Image (cartoon, rainbow, N blue to C red; front, side):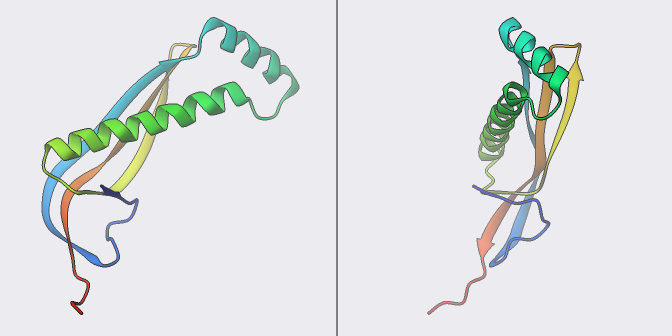
Length: 110
């Protein structure tokens, strides 16, 4: 599955547009992680517990988006984006979304 944030993919053309596709993940840091993150936030700087949580959630959201695109018969996703929101004080929602397409190579034959 080719996934790009651009509208075009070098060496390919869009043969068919399947439609919008997305993957949603809602994650919560455990109570221990929230306490550690809260203590770290007092000193300022990066909070590794939340960075790791969001990185994992983004990967999971992409995986779900790819599953949905595959089910639609797509082999590519263009204009991929992420969106996120907080739900309450302990949960984060991550959405990966884009347009599922069927790509075909335009590379010259040798």
